[in-house]
Image 1 (cartoon, rainbow, N blue to C red):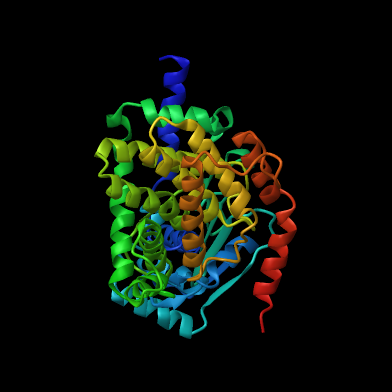
Image 2 (image 1 turned 120 degrees about the vertical axis):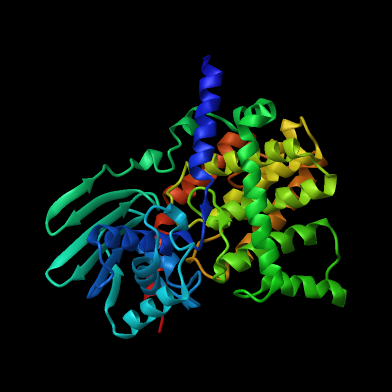
Length: 432
């Protein structure tokens, strides 16, 4: 196998690891997975209490989001329902098969004040530890650095499993990304054999279904349905931009509002997966793209989303739906102006010039608004690029090079926005 063939296979492997089905917001889901793992080791659901501690970033992303199938918001219900109904072997789909009885038992457990969730004294962005107690016995489970990376299972002081935490420079399993560029990813998406990337079409299937669900009834803030109503009122046009916003936002509405359908995630986030998928799907429908062309556009989108996110922490003050939408911009250019890498580069630079600094203030129903904003920016940036117009290297943090522009954006997320993140968490935790 030649060097390029080996690199392409590594990139396929990264896509298969980072583009996965996930039911519900992945931060509370990670806590639910820890509880499910603990109770599977304990061997009984007759537990006395659950004590959990999570990193500040995970607390931020779990405070205001609805846990699928429960109708309740927050980390305590995630910990409880994960214990009583979670599937420890299902990864991010841990809550996919919970029953009404599981939910009711979890709610009673909360009412009896037998669940505590507090902030752990850790510098890690993504950290969960859970203690489940029954009588004199307990199980302790830790998850670190990625949402499903179980690093410790301890029972009554005896180590059952102990794995290394993921190194910070490879928290997405993306060492290969450090050797790539946007152009290399574009060449991969354009040239790789279709059969090797056919699996990515599952992203379109799952996130399209979630979008339809979001339009079927009120979820969260119901932003997509509100936008749709404005078409009938004449306040919005039924054009391609509106379709992109509505169909993309609907999937996020449903996901953040507690729908039990899985999203196809990207880099451990359902919203990032939605943002990288749905604008591309809408354009593919518009141009009547073949499955192969759609697959190539989706691979380009998801791979660029992973590539950009690999350059900053897994959880940060930067809204990663905006960077995932940069991938979508590339995918839309591929569909609208095939074989034009310059337009891809221009679209990405336009987005860096437009969306820099959108903050992540925790997972919540309002995430759908950020997804909508990012999708709109992506299409606007694409239209500019197709007219050969871009934010120049003399403006803001944008450079003539797309790589340098991306690196500047990610430097903000990795360094100066760390203080922003601390301030956001302080505000959220101390709300009156």
